[in-house]
Amino acid sequence: MAEVRARPAYANRNMRGAKPFTAEQIARLRRLVDQYGLQTAAEIAGTSTNAICRVRARGWTVGAIGPQRKPRPTDFVLQADDMSLLDLSRHYGVSVATVSRWAAEVGRKPKQGHRTPSFVLPANAPALVKRHGMKAAAGLCGCHPETLRKHLRIAAALNDRSAGWAERRIAA
Image (cartoon, rainbow, N blue to C red):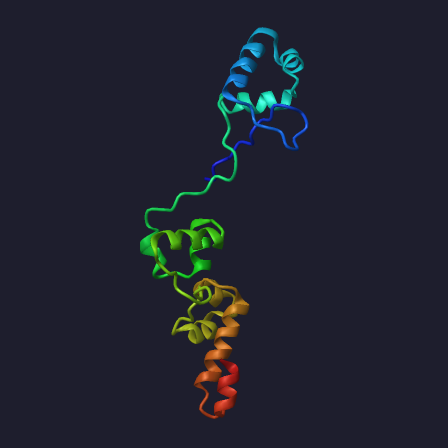
C-alpha cells in the first residue's frame, strides 16, 4: 500500500514563497482551536481553516518539506542482477529513475535490455489448438488468442524447411 504524504500547511494564505508552520506556531494554533474553535482560530492566526485542518490531520506536527524518497528494498541487491531496469521498476512499483538511484547506491548495474517476455510458447501448443480451438488453447496457455496465433505463426515459419533463410529470418 502506498503511503500518503501530507502536504505541508503554510502560515499564510498566499502559497507562493510562504513558509511552513513552525512548531511554536502549531502549538499556538492548537491552543486557539481548543479554546475558540476552528473558524475563529483561523481568523486570529491569519490563516485558512484548510491549513489548520491539514496540521490537525497530521497530528499537530511539523510537516516534512520536499520529496520523501522511498527507501531501497532489502532484496534489491538480489533482484538487480537478474532483472532489467523496467522489470525492477514494475516489480517495486517505482520509477526507472528511482531504480537507477538504488542501483548506484549499491554499486550494481541492472541487467541491460528490454523487458523479458512474459509468454513462452508451450511445446504442445499446436496440439492444444487442434484439439480445443484457438480461444480455449489460449486460455489454457494463459495468454490472449492473438498472442498465441502470433507465436504459432513465428514457430511455424522458423520450423518450415521449405522456406528459405530470408523468410525464416523475416518471420523471427
